[in-house]
Length: 250
Image (cartoon, rainbow, N blue to C red; front, side, top):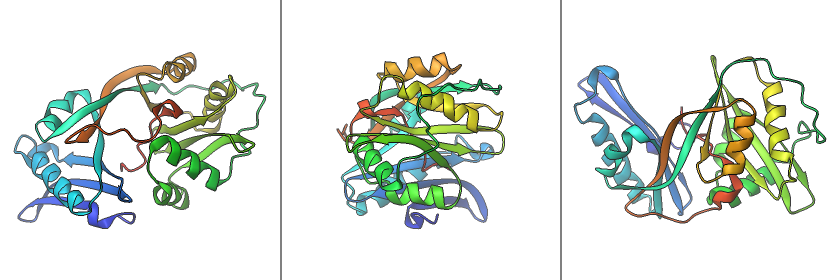
């Protein structure tokens, strides 16, 4: 609401709140739909369809070139019927709550790269400027990050969001990392969180990241797709996105 209030909408029946949707615009290049939620007592009444059509219409007026979202597999037909097309598949993984072993890392990931380095790396990987969103997450203490940087060509960072009963990792961006950096970064993050379940979303094509996560106890629980409205778009660099970041969701 604070980041992009004009992209937040709620459906009503009289004074009854039926559902909501939120979206964020990243300059003229990309707009992202982060939430589509319908109250369980009012599903099956096309409330969700109306919300998506409304927010898409609003985003088109903002003149953003592309509109995208992340969708779990069970909802792909819903969005396809509304004009979205599937792009890259991703996996949702979960690690049950357990005590992590103390890592024997060669790098101190607590000495984080500067925020400017993080924002630059995120823009290169994601393909649009999410600096306002990242700064808002950090300012509101809704999340924190760890990582490393070397010279001008290597930056890695992992964002962590902690909720009351679980935790989410992502974005996880690695630009020119050393071979063991990604594995050590995940292991370090697992020692820094409370003993709660952790979830993360990773593009299916990034096998190195998936192997790293599975070695650290993550298991696939859901599948999904990145989707674009109207036609697929090539933005960012997917090879640098070790994990997706659902920063704009509630």
